[in-house]
Length: 170
Image (tube, rainbow, N blue to C red; front, side, top):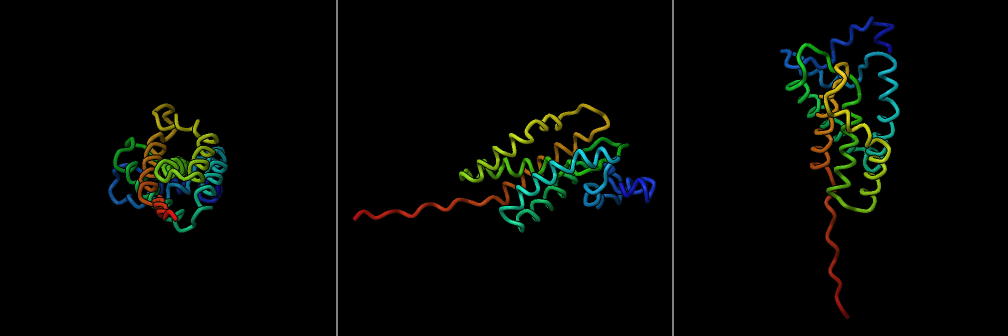
């Protein structure tokens, strides 16, 4: 929004432009840019809810997961996204956090992790159709690769349950 009013959308150039030389670092700026107020609002609530659900367990894991989602998801958009377009918006993180929570539930299989994954899926599982091509104005690539980044982050960061101690009979 500030971009529209203060900069006349000139910041959109800091979105991800696939395979453009010298622009890879835009993977770190793209999640903060949106194509208008409606785009920003559409991402705000799911981002806040899923980010909170991710951060509540461990802020340090949340920060590392965020970095991995942005780097992997954005990097894959930069490599494989539709050319001639600018990919921007926080939906990469929305899909990444959703995948992270689902992945942690799958790999940890603790009651808390599974319940959190089920809640995340119940709230936002319907957005998963967004990883498929559809509306040409929507970056399904950012959705898909954000999801992939979230799964990779979950695979790397999930807690391995400790085996129970053997009981001695007495």
